[in-house]
Length: 196
Image (cartoon, rainbow, N blue to C red):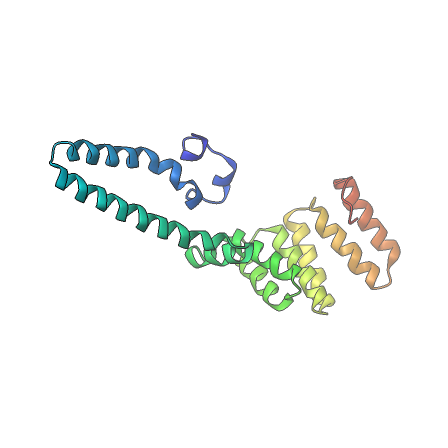
């Protein structure tokens, strides 16, 4: 019941449609169709019932094949996010999540494109601004990174990752006292923030 759309649950922050919930919504329709066919089949002779049974078997095989094909989308997270973007290219979250995967794999140029696209889809998204800064640092463009960190904090002054990233950038520039202040600020916002 929570996933049928009658209640505002967490996934609805991102999408009102999710294919992994469709089996729940289709149960009533499926039971109605199968029940109607079974009732109608009982009124006919055995030859017609065999044909209906064979058609039912074909339908199960087709649905099984479609399900098998759909399962490959969930092979790994990159495949999932790329498939999501193919179907919904203007959604910020899959761009951001794909970018995080690419970043973790060291594919910084591709990650930067996806973080930028995420920010285009949702211009006030502080994590994307901060992640662009982190990616620019990895690409050796530290001078550009600071402006993205600052924009991230302009959008969300309490975003501890931006404070931490500024601290790391300042430390790499030989400014440890300023870096420590940023780390302390990040820890004040999130005391269990291990990176800070």
